[in-house]
Amino acid sequence: MWRFGFFFHEMAFGLLSVFLPLYVIAIEGSLFDIGIMSASALFLAIPFSFFWGYMCDKTRRYKRFILLSFATLTVILYLFTFTTSIELLIMLYAVMWIFHVAHESPKNVLIAELYSREEWEKAFASYEIFAKTGWLSGLVFGFIISTYGIEAKFTLLFCSALNLVAFASSLVLVTDPPLIFERSLVKIEKTVDFTYRGIALASKLLDGIRTNERLKRENLYAFCSGLVLFSLATSIVATPLPVFFSENLALPVNFVFGIFVLSSAGGVAGYLLVLNKLNRQAEKTHISKIVLFRSILVFILIAVILMPLYNIVLASLILPLMGFTHALFLIYTLSVSMEFIPEGKAGLFNALVSIGGACGAFIGPFIAQTMGFIYVFLITSIVFLLAYIAFKISR
Image (tube, rainbow, N blue to C red):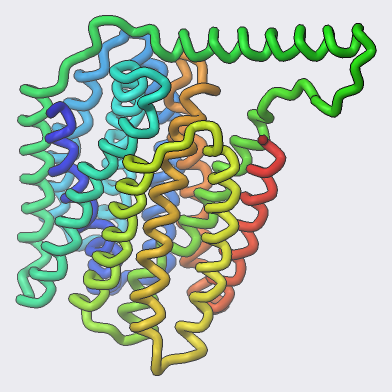
Protein backbone atom coordinates (compact mmCIF):
# COMPACT_ATOMS: atom_id res chain seq x y z
CA MET A 1 0.00 0.00 0.00
CA TRP A 2 2.95 2.39 0.48
CA ARG A 3 3.10 2.75 -3.33
CA PHE A 4 -0.36 4.33 -3.50
CA GLY A 5 0.86 7.94 -3.57
CA PHE A 6 3.23 7.22 -6.44
CA PHE A 7 0.25 6.34 -8.64
CA PHE A 8 -1.04 9.92 -8.47
CA HIS A 9 2.43 11.41 -8.88
CA GLU A 10 3.05 9.34 -12.00
CA MET A 11 -0.41 10.22 -13.32
CA ALA A 12 0.53 13.91 -13.18
CA PHE A 13 3.87 13.42 -14.90
CA GLY A 14 2.44 11.10 -17.52
CA LEU A 15 0.11 13.91 -18.52
CA LEU A 16 2.93 16.50 -18.37
CA SER A 17 5.28 14.37 -20.51
CA VAL A 18 3.24 15.15 -23.61
CA PHE A 19 1.46 18.32 -22.47
CA LEU A 20 4.52 20.44 -21.64
CA PRO A 21 6.39 20.14 -25.00
CA LEU A 22 3.16 20.97 -26.85
CA TYR A 23 2.42 23.79 -24.39
CA VAL A 24 5.82 25.36 -25.06
CA ILE A 25 5.10 25.34 -28.80
CA ALA A 26 1.60 26.75 -28.15
CA ILE A 27 2.99 29.79 -26.28
CA GLU A 28 5.33 30.51 -29.23
CA GLY A 29 8.33 28.59 -27.98
CA SER A 30 10.51 26.38 -30.19
CA LEU A 31 12.23 23.01 -30.17
CA PHE A 32 15.32 24.82 -28.87
CA ASP A 33 13.29 26.06 -25.87
CA ILE A 34 12.08 22.52 -25.18
CA GLY A 35 15.68 21.27 -25.37
CA ILE A 36 17.00 24.00 -23.07
CA MET A 37 14.16 23.44 -20.58
CA SER A 38 14.67 19.67 -20.41
CA ALA A 39 18.48 19.76 -20.48
CA SER A 40 18.85 22.46 -17.82
CA ALA A 41 16.48 20.59 -15.51
CA LEU A 42 18.27 17.27 -15.92
CA PHE A 43 21.76 18.77 -15.58
CA LEU A 44 20.67 20.51 -12.39
CA ALA A 45 19.24 17.22 -11.14
CA ILE A 46 22.60 15.40 -11.42
CA PRO A 47 24.30 16.78 -8.26
CA PHE A 48 21.01 16.66 -6.39
CA SER A 49 20.55 12.98 -7.26
CA PHE A 50 23.82 12.34 -5.40
CA PHE A 51 22.78 14.71 -2.61
CA TRP A 52 19.34 13.18 -1.95
CA GLY A 53 20.77 9.65 -2.22
CA TYR A 54 23.54 10.48 0.26
CA MET A 55 21.18 12.18 2.68
CA CYS A 56 18.59 9.40 2.77
CA ASP A 57 21.26 6.75 3.35
CA LYS A 58 23.06 8.88 5.93
CA THR A 59 19.92 9.60 7.95
CA ARG A 60 18.32 6.23 7.14
CA ARG A 61 15.07 8.14 6.82
CA TYR A 62 13.38 7.78 3.46
CA LYS A 63 9.79 8.91 4.03
CA ARG A 64 10.75 12.54 4.71
CA PHE A 65 12.41 12.91 1.29
CA ILE A 66 9.42 11.40 -0.50
CA LEU A 67 7.12 13.85 1.29
CA LEU A 68 9.44 16.78 0.53
CA SER A 69 9.40 15.85 -3.16
CA PHE A 70 5.62 15.59 -3.51
CA ALA A 71 4.91 18.72 -1.46
CA THR A 72 7.34 20.86 -3.45
CA LEU A 73 6.04 19.57 -6.79
CA THR A 74 2.52 20.52 -5.71
CA VAL A 75 3.57 24.13 -5.09
CA ILE A 76 5.70 24.52 -8.23
CA LEU A 77 3.05 23.09 -10.55
CA TYR A 78 0.57 25.53 -9.03
CA LEU A 79 3.00 28.37 -9.83
CA PHE A 80 3.10 27.15 -13.45
CA THR A 81 -0.47 28.41 -13.88
CA PHE A 82 0.62 32.04 -13.40
CA THR A 83 3.08 32.26 -16.29
CA THR A 84 3.23 32.03 -20.05
CA SER A 85 6.81 33.35 -20.17
CA ILE A 86 9.22 30.85 -21.70
CA GLU A 87 12.11 32.03 -19.51
CA LEU A 88 10.14 31.73 -16.27
CA LEU A 89 8.72 28.38 -17.36
CA ILE A 90 12.25 27.04 -17.93
CA MET A 91 13.38 28.29 -14.52
CA LEU A 92 10.42 26.78 -12.69
CA TYR A 93 10.81 23.48 -14.54
CA ALA A 94 14.49 23.29 -13.58
CA VAL A 95 13.73 23.94 -9.90
CA MET A 96 10.91 21.40 -10.03
CA TRP A 97 13.29 18.72 -11.26
CA ILE A 98 15.64 19.28 -8.29
CA PHE A 99 12.83 18.15 -5.99
CA HIS A 100 11.44 15.59 -8.41
CA VAL A 101 14.58 13.44 -8.01
CA ALA A 102 14.33 13.73 -4.21
CA HIS A 103 11.95 10.76 -4.06
CA GLU A 104 13.73 8.50 -6.59
CA SER A 105 16.65 7.23 -4.49
CA PRO A 106 14.56 6.75 -1.31
CA LYS A 107 11.99 4.82 -3.34
CA ASN A 108 14.64 2.52 -4.83
CA VAL A 109 16.23 1.88 -1.43
CA LEU A 110 12.85 1.19 0.17
CA ILE A 111 12.20 -1.55 -2.37
CA ALA A 112 15.70 -3.00 -1.97
CA GLU A 113 15.46 -3.07 1.83
CA LEU A 114 11.86 -4.26 2.14
CA TYR A 115 12.47 -7.33 -0.06
CA SER A 116 15.18 -10.00 -0.33
CA ARG A 117 17.55 -10.04 -3.34
CA GLU A 118 15.60 -12.92 -4.92
CA GLU A 119 12.49 -10.72 -4.90
CA TRP A 120 14.04 -7.47 -6.17
CA GLU A 121 13.01 -7.88 -9.81
CA LYS A 122 9.47 -8.80 -8.83
CA ALA A 123 9.32 -5.94 -6.32
CA PHE A 124 10.59 -3.37 -8.81
CA ALA A 125 8.24 -4.74 -11.47
CA SER A 126 5.30 -4.64 -9.06
CA TYR A 127 6.07 -1.01 -8.20
CA GLU A 128 6.48 -0.03 -11.84
CA ILE A 129 3.21 -1.68 -12.84
CA PHE A 130 1.45 0.36 -10.20
CA ALA A 131 3.26 3.60 -11.04
CA LYS A 132 3.09 3.26 -14.81
CA THR A 133 -0.60 2.48 -14.64
CA GLY A 134 -0.81 5.94 -13.11
CA TRP A 135 1.35 7.31 -15.96
CA LEU A 136 -0.96 5.62 -18.47
CA SER A 137 -4.00 7.11 -16.72
CA GLY A 138 -2.43 10.55 -17.04
CA LEU A 139 -1.98 10.07 -20.78
CA VAL A 140 -5.59 8.90 -21.11
CA PHE A 141 -6.72 12.00 -19.25
CA GLY A 142 -4.57 14.11 -21.60
CA PHE A 143 -6.34 12.49 -24.54
CA ILE A 144 -9.71 13.42 -23.02
CA ILE A 145 -8.89 17.06 -22.21
CA SER A 146 -7.31 17.62 -25.63
CA THR A 147 -10.41 16.15 -27.29
CA TYR A 148 -12.70 18.54 -25.40
CA GLY A 149 -10.33 21.52 -25.64
CA ILE A 150 -9.98 22.11 -21.88
CA GLU A 151 -7.66 25.05 -21.16
CA ALA A 152 -4.02 24.62 -20.16
CA LYS A 153 -4.45 26.30 -16.76
CA PHE A 154 -6.88 23.59 -15.65
CA THR A 155 -4.46 20.87 -16.77
CA LEU A 156 -1.65 22.35 -14.66
CA LEU A 157 -3.94 22.76 -11.64
CA PHE A 158 -5.02 19.15 -12.01
CA CYS A 159 -1.37 18.00 -12.03
CA SER A 160 -0.70 20.07 -8.92
CA ALA A 161 -3.73 18.51 -7.17
CA LEU A 162 -2.54 15.00 -8.09
CA ASN A 163 0.80 15.62 -6.37
CA LEU A 164 -1.06 16.95 -3.32
CA VAL A 165 -2.98 13.66 -3.17
CA ALA A 166 0.35 11.81 -3.57
CA PHE A 167 1.73 13.76 -0.58
CA ALA A 168 -1.30 13.04 1.61
CA SER A 169 -1.28 9.33 0.70
CA SER A 170 2.44 8.94 1.37
CA LEU A 171 2.15 10.79 4.68
CA VAL A 172 -0.21 8.06 5.88
CA LEU A 173 1.06 4.95 4.10
CA VAL A 174 4.87 5.21 3.72
CA THR A 175 6.98 3.99 6.64
CA ASP A 176 10.74 3.63 6.96
CA PRO A 177 12.04 0.03 7.19
CA PRO A 178 12.81 -1.00 10.80
CA LEU A 179 16.06 -2.76 9.75
CA ILE A 180 18.36 -1.80 6.87
CA PHE A 181 20.73 -4.59 5.93
CA GLU A 182 19.65 -6.32 2.69
CA ARG A 183 22.04 -4.43 0.37
CA SER A 184 24.93 -5.13 2.75
CA LEU A 185 24.08 -8.84 2.76
CA VAL A 186 24.03 -8.92 -1.04
CA LYS A 187 27.51 -7.35 -1.21
CA ILE A 188 28.83 -9.88 1.32
CA GLU A 189 27.26 -12.69 -0.72
CA LYS A 190 28.92 -11.45 -3.92
CA THR A 191 32.31 -11.17 -2.19
CA VAL A 192 32.02 -14.69 -0.75
CA ASP A 193 30.94 -16.06 -4.14
CA PHE A 194 33.89 -14.39 -5.89
CA THR A 195 36.32 -15.74 -3.25
CA TYR A 196 34.88 -19.24 -3.57
CA ARG A 197 35.21 -19.21 -7.35
CA GLY A 198 38.80 -18.02 -6.99
CA ILE A 199 39.71 -20.82 -4.56
CA ALA A 200 37.98 -23.43 -6.75
CA LEU A 201 39.84 -22.24 -9.86
CA ALA A 202 43.18 -22.16 -8.01
CA SER A 203 42.61 -25.72 -6.73
CA LYS A 204 41.99 -27.00 -10.26
CA LEU A 205 45.15 -25.34 -11.57
CA LEU A 206 47.27 -26.66 -8.69
CA ASP A 207 45.96 -30.19 -9.34
CA GLY A 208 46.98 -29.91 -12.98
CA ILE A 209 43.40 -29.80 -14.26
CA ARG A 210 43.05 -27.78 -17.45
CA THR A 211 40.13 -25.39 -17.46
CA ASN A 212 38.77 -22.59 -19.59
CA GLU A 213 37.19 -20.85 -16.61
CA ARG A 214 38.15 -17.24 -15.93
CA LEU A 215 37.86 -15.38 -12.67
CA LYS A 216 36.17 -12.16 -13.66
CA ARG A 217 34.20 -9.49 -11.85
CA GLU A 218 31.52 -7.45 -13.56
CA ASN A 219 32.89 -4.33 -15.23
CA LEU A 220 31.21 -1.52 -13.28
CA TYR A 221 32.60 1.23 -15.53
CA ALA A 222 31.25 -0.44 -18.67
CA PHE A 223 27.87 -0.94 -16.97
CA CYS A 224 27.71 2.75 -15.98
CA SER A 225 28.78 3.80 -19.48
CA GLY A 226 26.02 1.66 -20.98
CA LEU A 227 23.50 3.21 -18.61
CA VAL A 228 24.52 6.75 -19.62
CA LEU A 229 24.48 5.88 -23.34
CA PHE A 230 21.07 4.24 -23.10
CA SER A 231 19.67 7.26 -21.27
CA LEU A 232 21.30 9.57 -23.82
CA ALA A 233 19.74 7.74 -26.76
CA THR A 234 16.33 7.54 -25.09
CA SER A 235 16.34 11.27 -24.35
CA ILE A 236 17.50 12.24 -27.85
CA VAL A 237 14.48 10.58 -29.40
CA ALA A 238 11.91 11.06 -26.62
CA THR A 239 12.27 14.81 -25.96
CA PRO A 240 11.18 16.09 -29.41
CA LEU A 241 8.91 13.11 -30.23
CA PRO A 242 5.57 14.73 -29.22
CA VAL A 243 6.42 17.69 -31.48
CA PHE A 244 7.33 15.29 -34.30
CA PHE A 245 3.88 13.73 -34.22
CA SER A 246 2.09 17.05 -33.75
CA GLU A 247 4.02 19.29 -36.16
CA ASN A 248 5.77 17.06 -38.72
CA LEU A 249 3.00 14.48 -39.10
CA ALA A 250 0.26 17.08 -38.44
CA LEU A 251 -1.62 14.81 -36.03
CA PRO A 252 -4.26 16.30 -33.71
CA VAL A 253 -3.18 16.64 -30.09
CA ASN A 254 -5.57 13.91 -28.94
CA PHE A 255 -3.98 11.53 -31.50
CA VAL A 256 -0.55 12.37 -30.08
CA PHE A 257 -1.76 11.46 -26.58
CA GLY A 258 -3.33 8.31 -28.03
CA ILE A 259 -0.01 7.13 -29.51
CA PHE A 260 1.75 7.68 -26.19
CA VAL A 261 -1.03 5.81 -24.41
CA LEU A 262 -0.09 2.80 -26.55
CA SER A 263 3.58 3.28 -25.65
CA SER A 264 2.78 3.39 -21.95
CA ALA A 265 0.56 0.31 -22.29
CA GLY A 266 3.53 -1.51 -23.83
CA GLY A 267 5.57 -0.54 -20.76
CA VAL A 268 2.97 -1.97 -18.39
CA ALA A 269 3.02 -5.20 -20.41
CA GLY A 270 6.81 -5.34 -19.98
CA TYR A 271 6.55 -5.03 -16.21
CA LEU A 272 3.91 -7.77 -16.15
CA LEU A 273 6.27 -10.06 -18.08
CA VAL A 274 9.09 -9.51 -15.57
CA LEU A 275 6.67 -10.08 -12.70
CA ASN A 276 5.54 -13.45 -14.08
CA LYS A 277 8.74 -14.73 -15.74
CA LEU A 278 11.69 -14.01 -13.53
CA ASN A 279 15.22 -15.18 -14.37
CA ARG A 280 17.83 -13.52 -12.21
CA GLN A 281 20.76 -15.43 -13.70
CA ALA A 282 20.05 -14.26 -17.26
CA GLU A 283 19.29 -10.61 -16.48
CA LYS A 284 22.66 -9.27 -17.69
CA THR A 285 22.24 -11.10 -21.01
CA HIS A 286 18.72 -9.71 -21.30
CA ILE A 287 19.97 -6.14 -20.87
CA SER A 288 22.24 -6.22 -23.93
CA LYS A 289 19.60 -7.94 -26.08
CA ILE A 290 16.98 -5.37 -25.08
CA VAL A 291 19.28 -2.47 -25.99
CA LEU A 292 20.05 -4.00 -29.40
CA PHE A 293 16.35 -4.50 -30.14
CA ARG A 294 15.60 -0.91 -29.11
CA SER A 295 18.26 0.31 -31.56
CA ILE A 296 16.49 -1.55 -34.36
CA LEU A 297 13.09 -0.12 -33.35
CA VAL A 298 14.33 3.48 -33.45
CA PHE A 299 15.96 2.89 -36.84
CA ILE A 300 12.61 1.63 -38.17
CA LEU A 301 11.05 4.95 -37.09
CA ILE A 302 12.72 6.44 -40.18
CA ALA A 303 10.07 4.58 -42.18
CA VAL A 304 7.41 6.73 -40.47
CA ILE A 305 8.89 9.69 -42.37
CA LEU A 306 9.59 7.89 -45.63
CA MET A 307 6.19 6.12 -45.79
CA PRO A 308 3.63 8.85 -44.88
CA LEU A 309 0.62 6.71 -45.87
CA TYR A 310 1.41 4.26 -43.06
CA ASN A 311 2.89 6.65 -40.47
CA ILE A 312 0.12 6.23 -37.85
CA VAL A 313 0.12 2.43 -38.25
CA LEU A 314 3.91 2.20 -37.95
CA ALA A 315 4.03 4.56 -34.97
CA SER A 316 1.23 2.60 -33.28
CA LEU A 317 3.28 -0.58 -33.63
CA ILE A 318 6.76 0.77 -32.81
CA LEU A 319 6.01 2.91 -29.75
CA PRO A 320 4.38 0.11 -27.69
CA LEU A 321 7.42 -2.08 -28.41
CA MET A 322 9.70 0.77 -27.32
CA GLY A 323 7.70 1.11 -24.10
CA PHE A 324 7.87 -2.65 -23.60
CA THR A 325 11.67 -2.81 -24.02
CA HIS A 326 12.23 0.23 -21.79
CA ALA A 327 10.25 -1.45 -19.00
CA LEU A 328 12.38 -4.61 -19.17
CA PHE A 329 15.58 -2.57 -19.29
CA LEU A 330 14.63 -0.47 -16.27
CA ILE A 331 13.81 -3.44 -14.04
CA TYR A 332 16.96 -5.40 -14.89
CA THR A 333 19.33 -2.42 -14.58
CA LEU A 334 17.76 -1.26 -11.31
CA SER A 335 18.20 -4.72 -9.80
CA VAL A 336 21.80 -5.05 -11.01
CA SER A 337 22.69 -1.52 -9.91
CA MET A 338 21.50 -2.21 -6.37
CA GLU A 339 24.20 -4.89 -6.17
CA PHE A 340 26.89 -2.52 -7.42
CA ILE A 341 26.07 0.74 -5.65
CA PRO A 342 27.39 1.02 -2.06
CA GLU A 343 25.41 2.58 0.77
CA GLY A 344 25.69 6.35 0.82
CA LYS A 345 25.70 6.49 -2.99
CA ALA A 346 22.10 5.47 -3.68
CA GLY A 347 21.71 8.46 -6.00
CA LEU A 348 24.34 7.18 -8.47
CA PHE A 349 21.81 5.34 -10.65
CA ASN A 350 19.61 8.41 -11.04
CA ALA A 351 22.64 10.65 -11.56
CA LEU A 352 23.90 8.48 -14.42
CA VAL A 353 20.45 8.45 -16.00
CA SER A 354 20.26 12.24 -15.60
CA ILE A 355 23.66 12.76 -17.27
CA GLY A 356 22.56 10.93 -20.39
CA GLY A 357 19.07 12.38 -20.23
CA ALA A 358 20.30 15.97 -19.90
CA CYS A 359 22.66 15.71 -22.86
CA GLY A 360 20.03 13.99 -24.99
CA ALA A 361 17.33 16.50 -24.02
CA PHE A 362 19.37 19.26 -25.67
CA ILE A 363 20.90 17.25 -28.52
CA GLY A 364 17.58 15.75 -29.69
CA PRO A 365 15.69 19.04 -30.27
CA PHE A 366 18.84 20.67 -31.68
CA ILE A 367 19.26 17.93 -34.31
CA ALA A 368 15.53 17.99 -35.07
CA GLN A 369 15.55 21.78 -35.56
CA THR A 370 18.72 21.98 -37.65
CA MET A 371 18.92 18.65 -39.51
CA GLY A 372 15.51 17.00 -39.33
CA PHE A 373 13.99 14.01 -37.58
CA ILE A 374 15.59 11.41 -39.89
CA TYR A 375 18.94 12.29 -38.33
CA VAL A 376 17.40 12.19 -34.84
CA PHE A 377 16.34 8.57 -35.40
CA LEU A 378 19.59 7.58 -37.13
CA ILE A 379 21.88 9.05 -34.44
CA THR A 380 19.71 7.59 -31.67
CA SER A 381 19.98 4.14 -33.22
CA ILE A 382 23.78 4.44 -33.35
CA VAL A 383 23.99 5.53 -29.69
CA PHE A 384 21.85 2.53 -28.68
CA LEU A 385 24.34 0.31 -30.52
CA LEU A 386 27.18 1.85 -28.48
CA ALA A 387 25.19 1.15 -25.31
CA TYR A 388 24.76 -2.45 -26.45
CA ILE A 389 28.56 -2.81 -26.80
CA ALA A 390 29.10 -1.32 -23.33
CA PHE A 391 26.68 -3.75 -21.69
CA LYS A 392 28.27 -6.69 -23.52
CA ILE A 393 31.66 -5.66 -22.11
CA SER A 394 30.25 -5.28 -18.58
CA ARG A 395 29.21 -8.95 -18.30
